Structures are given as C-alpha cells and as structure tokens.
Length: 312
Ligand code: VAH
Image (cartoon, rainbow, N blue to C red; front, top):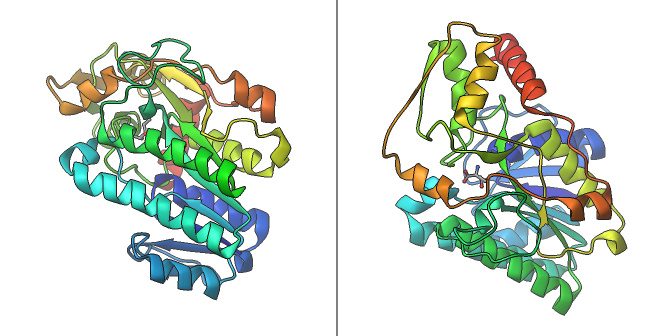
C-alpha cells in the first residue's frame, strides 16, 4: 500500500484524493498527527507522529507499505517561531522514513522540497537547478539538508526517492499552515468574504507560485516516470507562474470589481520572501519527465473564485 504522512495538510489533503482515485481506497493509507476533519466511509486513516520511529515501523509493517509520501513538515513562517522544532520535525521525520525504507525495502518515496532552499546569493530570476544556495530560514536550511540526504540515500542505498522544489502552492480546499506564500491563498478567501485584504507581503514581492491541480499532477507524473529518467535525485525545480501581490490583486478585481487590497508593513515574512527567487527555471523537469504547467495567473484566479463561490 501507499501511505501519506502529513495527509491533513494543504498538499496532503489533495494528494490523498488523487492517489485514492489512481490506486483505489484499499491501497492508500492516510496519516497525520491528529484526526482529519472528515473521512470517507471506506478511507483508511492512522494517527502517527513521524518522530516516533517504532510506531512508524509498526505502521509500515501493518499496512505492508511499498510507497511513502512524506508531507509532514513545519513551514517557513512557523519555523522561524520554533526553529528547533522545525529542524527536529523536518529532519528527523525524513531520516526516520529514509532509514525505515532501507530496512523494510520500501520501493518508492516522495519528499517535497521548496524554493525556500534558495537564498540571498542565489540567482533571483529564472533560478537554475544548480546554483549557489544559501537559505537563511530554518525551513529552507532543513529542506536543503533534506535534499542532500535524499541524494545520499539514493546513491548509497539505491532508494528510489523523488522530490520537487514546490513554489508557493495555491488551493481552495485546505488552507496552508504557516507559510510565507499563504497570502496568495488568504487573498481569495478575504476577497469573497469581506471584499478587502491586507497583504503581509509588499506590492512588488514577486514569488514563484503553482496551482494545486498542477502540483498534484506534477507530483504523480514525477512518481510515474521510469526511474532511469530521473536524473535529479536532490529535488527538481518546478515552475508554474510568478506574480506579486499587486498583480494577483488586479486579476481578482477583474472578477470582484470592488475588491480593495492594502499592504501591512514590517511583517517578518517579508524578509523570508525577499530571500527567495522571483522565478524558477525548470528545464530539467521538462527534459526528464515532460513537466508542463496548465494554470497561469488568469486561469488560476478564475478557477479559485469559481470553486470558492461553489464550495466554501
Ligand atoms: C512556505 N508554502 O511558504 C511554503 C513553501 C515556497 C513556499 O515552501 O513556507
């Protein structure tokens, strides 16, 4: 079976739906440190703390796990409030999965990295797969270290572990928790709820972003690709779109004409965003496994507002 660790999070929630559709409910186990808000009648869920290696081993054996998607992590903004906890969860959670995968012969692993692995001295525009990487958030540092571990365990133990450096991900089903790119999700909820939003990032802060449908499809396409095609065993750059708060605000105003966007000064997340690239080069993902995004800013905005109006 396949297990998703951190299945209640922004990405895990939607990856679970896609994996159950692809492999069948009976072959997918979701898990997280707390119960999900809702669970379908034939959906399997297990409570687990990824830092409890013995419990994790028992869970992997109980369900005869052959694939692991490790989505449990603490994101950038929360990480700056609790750096030691962020390091512990992000690194030891990964190490537990890597070591158990070697011990139990688990076939495939997915682990998410992030554009947070780049730092102030990385090229800012069209950031390449290989370049200087000096992340200065504990989240980015843990993701860079995680990439090094993934590549090491692949070469030393032959683990088929695959990874994507996700941009900020935008979705309507589950709000992100504690990220720096979360403004791009909150702005939609507020535009429809109150008609105004105060962005914690400045108008010109351009960041790489990806719509959830593209993120989920890309993840599954990466995992489905033949192993010999996967030439990057650290983590693949992946690009969707890039925009700043002013641009997404203007796009929303085309649909919600009286929407008012304002800006909050001196939010700690501004410094994190300023250390990240504004756009990403993903030629390696294009060449190795035919990556191609489907949603640009216009299409994403339209889809977000339609879904929020119909579902939230
Ligand atoms: C964050 N959403 O903001 C995550 C992501 C690139 C951003 O890593 O921390």
